Length: 136
Image (tube, rainbow, N blue to C red; front, side, top):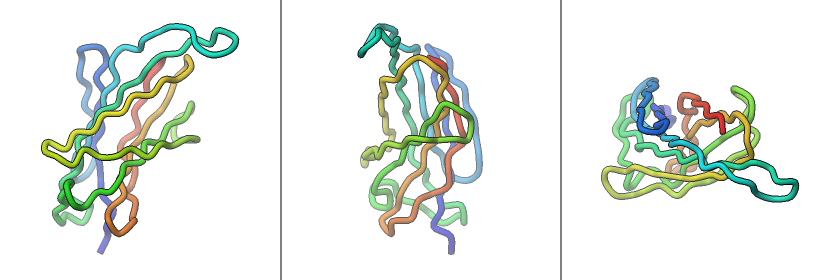
């Protein structure tokens, strides 16, 4: 029996919502307009990216998934080229309905690609959500 979960991820750019889907279950992520500014040595331009996603409710094999008891953490992967996620952050899930989790990153200017996975109570990591992109 597969314990892998499938996600759907979405981004909000300013006030527009773009949905991208895949497989069973659902997850969502949002990116509002970035906040510009200077930061760090050399005056590197930086901006914030806010991602928001909903927990999946089914595994890829169709069995039920309870976000409140079955998900221990999310892994938010990102990088500067499509399919090449060089960094990840462990994110604590929201364990109360509607199980929406939000995470904000401050990054240097550039184009970034993101995907999310979850880890269940058995320590098994799901497959990646659909990749999404944001230019800061």
